[in-house]
Amino acid sequence: MPASETALPLRIGARTLWTLRRRLARRRLSLAEALGGGVPALPPLAEDDDGYLVTALPAALAEKLAARHAGLKPFVRQRYRRSYARLDLDFEGYLGAFSAKSRSTCRRKLKRLAERSGGTLDVRCYRSEEEIALFHGHARAVSAKTYQERLLGAGLPDGAEALAQMRALARAGRARGWLLFVGDAPVAYLWAPAEAGCLIYAHLGYDPDLADFSPGTVLQLEAMRQLMAEKAFGLFDFTEGEGQHKSLFATGGIDCIDLLLVRPTFANLLAGYALGGFDRAVALAKRALGASAARRLRR
Image (cartoon, rainbow, N blue to C red; front, side):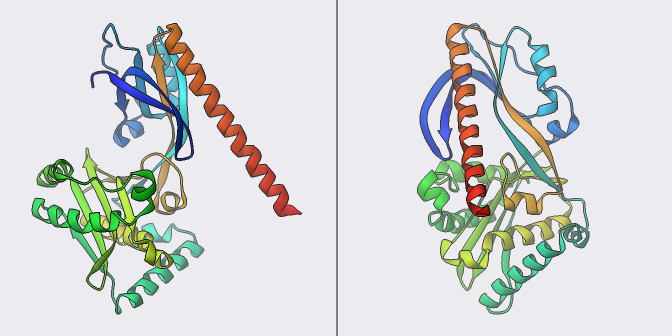
């Protein structure tokens, strides 16, 4: 992918305090690449490019990649766990790997929402180009209610261009969408495009009025049940970031980083050290606040 101006935010939680910009060639590793263990190839830089931003890179490969590009200065932008689930498993065996408490909790959530729905769960899967158009309309109605869209601007993409891209993926057999209905109303959606035989956890949202019924968890569980029966995809990539939802449904994970590799100019080094110093300060503050809260709880 050719280099372009790339925003490098100084962020605390969802709030961006400042943004630095560099001209970077971006390279995101697919899950298959990350599991393969090979050092990724990077495209040559143009004369006016500042460097690379390599995301979802297994942490174990960072030194090897930096050594391969010894003329560039490396900066680690962030560290995280990339979770995934194997889809070649038998669903009952997959569920059996959950803790006894998690299995009991999932069954209780399924039962409660089924009772709320009149006795059965209404989960619908969308695959074809025509079905995805229908899915998009219903899913957008749910997404508009979610905090991800209202507060973070991170809901399911809207508009003709977004729908055209989703239809193209469906036409190529590279997407699945799911909706959970209560009565005639959609209350949760899951959108998962595919890459190299791997479905990607792109967008999940639910009606906050039904949050007590855990519709997102119920929908994810039913989607996993269908996928393990279908056997059309090998993996489900929960992508970067950690959380209870991902840790519950994942069967494995990789420790990853986002790595900046930049030419050692004054402006690039200043940006790299500023980002690194800011990220370390935020991490220290979080640990201090966590330790303080723990001490208060022990009193």
